[in-house]
Amino acid sequence: MKTNLCKSRRFGFTLVEVMMATAIMSLVTSSAFALFFFIQNSYYQASVQETATHRASLAISRMVYGFGVEGRGLRAASDVTRTDTGHGWVLNVKDADGASAGSFEYRSDLGTIVYTPADAATVHPVADSVSQADVEIDSDAMALSIRVGVERGRYAASKQMETIVKWRN
Image (cartoon, rainbow, N blue to C red; front, side):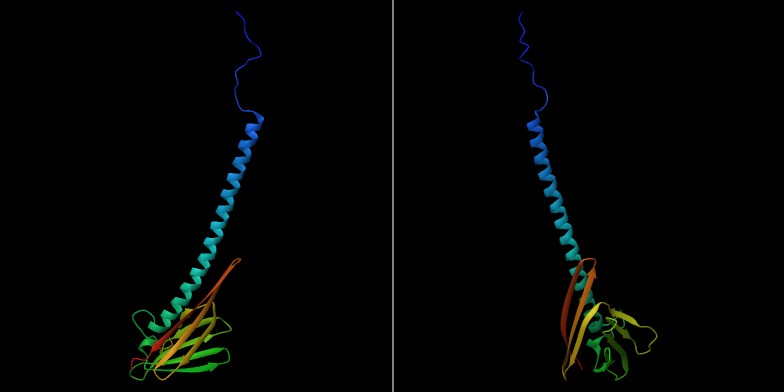
């Protein structure tokens, strides 16, 4: 019986096949990493933007509707006066009985808005990271504008919200 020594069975892959598989796998892996980093970057940017939006919305809500069950916000006020200070403004709020319901103070040097009830027992933070706040008072309404800025690492965002409060009384 004659055997053919030149003809051998082929086991394994050639060097060219291995190199092609490695190149394709490298492309897929690098694309996956690039996609992962893009998604992570987008997530962090959206997270910072959402934080700025939430803080601005919360500040407007706290000023208009008040804190907790008290409901001593601008919406329930019968009289609001604005006093400009060297570092911002103070809104003195009176309720329907004409009694002081407290005050909102914007401090541009600290970037905060705080609420002090009439009894002045505690000070409630309304907002922090405030870069701009403006109030315009008319005879029948008040325009309120707040801009909040948030920085987290290399990501930054700011959000401005505005509302008009019409006097009920």
